[in-house]
Length: 301
Length: 301
Image 1 (cartoon, chains in turn green, cyan):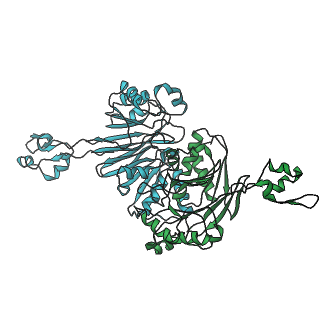
Image 2: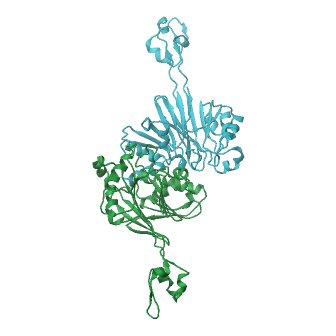
Image 3: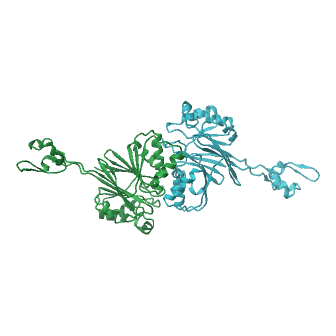
């Protein structure tokens, strides 16, 4: 199971009740906070996501609408006597920004905070159940995207069916990996006879602020869910390019060319009160698009 | 006219819909933002106070619940193309915290930002219409309070009455200052005969986080309105002292002993959902107390 809860879908200035960027991705039992604009801790409370569930925070870049809520969240976690470790992944300079603000307040956190500077694209986290890969985005300052992928689960051995065949238990791990078994008289026992497939692993790619960049297509190819920024409607394509942002059609084109299953768009400019046209313009190119809404949870089962 | 709008009246962690500390003081046409917890820019929007009205920001100390909203407000002002100067008064280290966050985002503000480090108690601002005095508070880290005082307006000369007397125009400024006039034959013309008093000047003292400190009594003596923190009810007096905060009775005692006209209390601990007891406990000692409420404007006409 993969679910994404949008806490903030606006760019730059909070407007029309919309907050700056933040979202929580849940992969089975793991919660990832992705970006952390001002007010994120209040949004977490509002949507009843417990701060204590979050052990990993990913910050795409150091424009304020993506991280000004981080220091408040970190200190609140400490005031609430958190004890479990917290890991932050972000641009190197963020560590100093956190440190100076803790130092001036003479704050000793109640938990261990591990800061992981992102220095280059590649695998950021490789755990039992998932991997997180970081990739470069083309924005005005250093900016990173994140690809979350559940690991393939091994096939399940069917305990009743396996009894019909004389298969050594030492071969079971290879059965789980999908191999056929050949017994001593040369008979091949097809893997499907004795195992069942598990639910396929899911993937989610988060493209924070970026100009239209076809280099992303290979990176996010065939993911189950893609979040791509659409700061502007098509009529402001010039402004989007000048500010290293994307339009609706550009986001939809990336989704289409990468053959993703589902597209969620967000990071709307504060000049737009109504978002209907974001849906119209994206779905013209890529049907399976949703315009992100704060407090909404997007599931993939 | 003096009015105080409460934008946030909670301490530490946002809770029960209450925000961290921020308030706007209006003295005639001048707007002062006092402290700036996370979410202040959204609270300004909610209560329809235009960011552009604010030219002076005062930060009491560098615990996050008093300033984590500042950087977001500063950058939003720039995104909204502010041009007029902005002055910030606060602990010296705040300047570096602002600078590093602007630098990493490669942000050039659209306006001139003047940072004034508070280094010692005394007069911080002496303008035509008001003075702002800063005083020390006794908290866990360097912490300042602010006393805002409208300047006494000169008395108004009554243009009809003055014609009855042969008073040289060069003496008018002295009449405005309240002096009597003695003419050449020694007749004294009482000031009240030819001038009228203007509305008395108003004063407001803001006591941010502080342990109970009778040293404050002289500082805030007879102000028209005093804001004093009451993080805890009396039953948590030990906790208040240990954390360098105050209780209801302590705030009320300061108000009583300083003979202020009106007391507003705030900075409530996140453990209190309901605030009724704050009113009960303070008014037992000092009748003219109000428990601050976000979005409420406290006037002195």
